Length: 316
Image 1 (cartoon, helix red, strand yellow):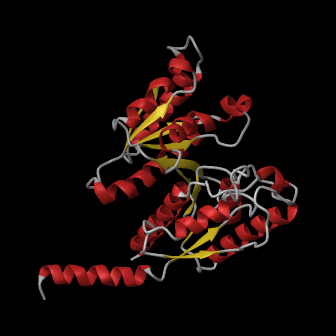
Image 2 (image 1 turned 120 degrees about the horizontal axis):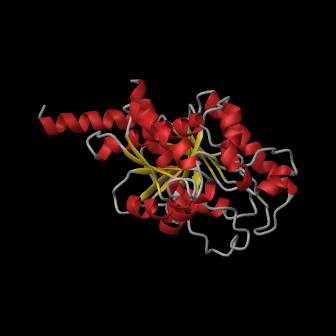
């Protein structure tokens, strides 16, 4: 058997195993754009062929653009079924469509978002909300909280956890196309100009800078910072950094969505089973009009498959 033939045989064997991996897909609120972007993404020729995808909890009959409690309950039930299937070994990953959080709260969904729901159902307390798309990957030390609470929630432990989970995520992905080098991770400051040597706030020097030193002691990535938030994302987009640790929600999501709104993916780091979602909401005003863009959902499905395959490979 020639070398090329042997390689092709190994590849086919791997795909045969991979085909056994199934990804759960929830459509989110049935009155939003979730169902249509899910269908479009599943029909795309760019969809990964390495895994199988299964829609969980389809809710027919919803009126596009008109959210109801019944639709919210269906979305909640679908999330529960996806988690149960994943915990039972049926699904190797979960990709979720967008939900309407206020409507979900009316039916007992007492979580700030799907990120926190999955963490609670998996029994995980150390997790990170991360978004990736285009030239940027950002991980959030604090996520769905009011801004006035952010400084009190920033701790050395939280920054360390976020940095290390981002490092592991980037290392997993970089191994495929960068020869397995250490990720280069920038840590953003909290205050303008990263505190301007204490003139604009003390958190950057007293808290974030020591956390960066501790992150570098782990040897898991090349961490630098704290960098001024008004320049660090430009530098990352230019290729200087592979990812950015951000102190709060919009610090990371505004530049990510500006540069990669239609390809961005939300991925929850720290879970035993990968979970991804598109970076947009329900967009009720677009539902049923045929204008919804499915690229972010497609990216979420493909990333879920990529992570599921890499998890499987690490087990063998």
